[in-house]
Length: 306
Image (tube, rainbow, N blue to C red; front, side):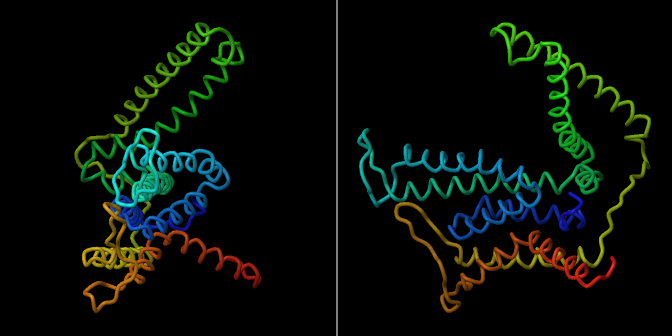
């Protein structure tokens, strides 16, 4: 994603950002935090993936969210506000419905953030960050991130090739489809093994594992990266401080109760500023992209050449 501004930042900035937003998305259950994280993750994923990602989110993620939200009240009957009784005799409570919605939003948000992480944190960035600390693990993870899309692409090529000779899995009886599927899988496994041997020979030829071997890197930590790193650290520290002091306190059982806004006189950081800071943190990549787009349009309209 070379057209994404945040993609061009240093891998340390990218990694720290996604680590912070993913941890906050998994542990903060306040409705405002859940809504902010979901909106920002959804918007950024659509910005990175375009219409394809938008269709995927509407086709798969939205039904998953609705299903997960409806699943919790069917099995969880805790809560003090009883709305009605199910045919089984168990109560349907308002708290179980709200908790189901919160859990579903959290699930979808984490998936959306991971999709953005997969677009921004490429294998070379991962190896750059962890190659010296955990070389074996970083190599395995980078190879997995690289080979999974390649395997998906290759199996499509094999399936199309088999389809041209009438040996695909879409026609014929169940046994013939199974036979053709096994054939495609066998070809795929053979290709994967050959690819693994070629990769091992290539790594050996390039001196992988030899002492004193250097690694090429195009990443440089500059002033722009330092400003972004400080921005993330300050926002994260303020949000954590607000959470520790109770500014993000929220519970769903036995009754729904929590903080929306509090004054500093109560010993709690102002809730509104915590939410605004959380939004500023989650929307950081979008803000950077909008800023660069506006700058490009301004220069383009003024007739200046970049």
